[in-house]
Image 1: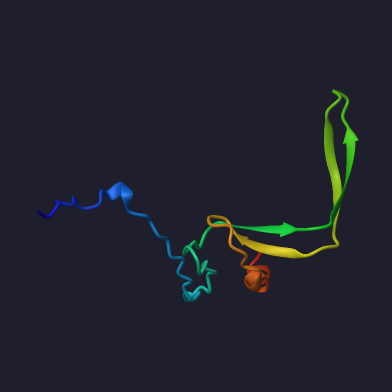
Image 2 (image 1 turned 90 degrees about the horizontal axis):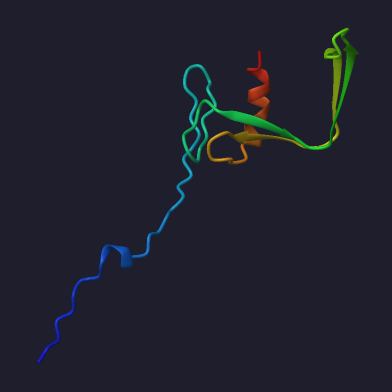
Length: 100
């Protein structure tokens, strides 16, 4: 006699994730779009080897107020997607051109 085999349960199946790299596209306003997740709003810069000098004065109540600051970057600057943390450094030049 043949033994009945039940179909595999959904939790027994292994899930596979495939990361699809989409080509970046630019709209008429030349917005940067992450080719990995489609994010076009949240980005950040990551700078290595940074020296920040800030000049403060102390107020009469003991608090401090910044007067001026000077930032020097000695290392690499990377441009990162704020949603999936992908390295988008190749778009950093375009980012700098659109920085206001």
